[in-house]
Length: 451
Image (tube, rainbow, N blue to C red; front, side):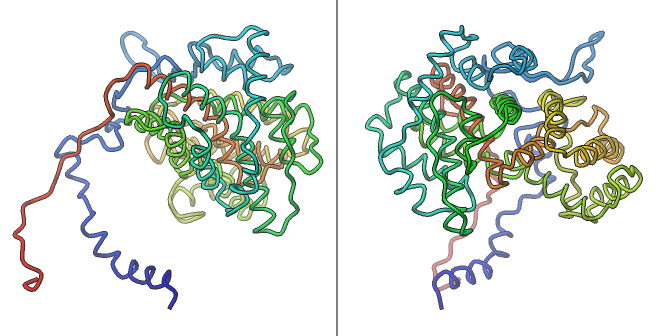
């Protein structure tokens, strides 16, 4: 018998024993006052640190009372809506946002050009890295492929473990530059070796933006429309940063606090982001929407849509988890500002791609689903769609394969992770080490022949 099957059979046999010893009774969390997931019973996060990088707000104070308000996201004090509106669709803003998060100020034109030049220079990977690392063991899971590549890059860096701030900044800038190539080339390797597709390895153009280069490297003909590049650029900006408390950014700070190197830290962040409760959420939205299409006949029939969404919420349809994916957020209540911004561009792209019918379905699911969740779950603060609800639809209209949805999130969030790593190194002095209450009781030891 193959060793793998032997191990698998043993694991299956021992799983009940393993599960039994790892179960913690839910009531004990309340008894010991444990804030599960570092959140209290109302969902508010435990205050674990301070940051100057970004601010997320979803409430305002009226007559001394906290009331829900439209969500707001600020990068270094600047509202992301202003960053988007300031571009007027005539220039790319991802690089501008990256400069802002890393250096704390909006760049002048000259500073932005210099920054763009540095990022373009960083798009040069080690000799034969694509062949020897990315193509060596292609995987459908591009996030795993990227993680392996990031860890391997450490072996090409003579200063991999140097925590001097200028060296860490250099490493972060190079990873920001190289992430699009790790993702897109990883997909092409998988598409060629695993799916028998054609192989395209296009070099990035140093004159283009990150968004343009992603589309250039991904597509066989390297062509894209101005609107396509603009919408992807906005999506990357909106995914760039979201406070220190989200799972992957907190992971970045935890690993940084231990004194680990940049490559290990970013690999850990990638591993966190790939989970379906975090960066993989937009894939769940796409799969749910495909399921809805299969079970309703009229995208405009609100009663039919409501009936099926009720089945999803009750656990009788789709993945039987009782969730309408892309709805609700741990912080935002009335609205997610990222979703509001992205939806305005979704509408323009849907017209260009002749996808208005699909947009109508999304709009109806958004309208009906938020109300159903608020009613059934008795969520009085309000329920709104989050950025994941539309981001997958955007990528689908751009012809981006689903395997790259979460990697695109990583390409954007690498900037935020970098800012938080640098802030942790500069400001924090202690390793992050929360407490756990032990439930272990003393037991009598018996020699092996007496067990």
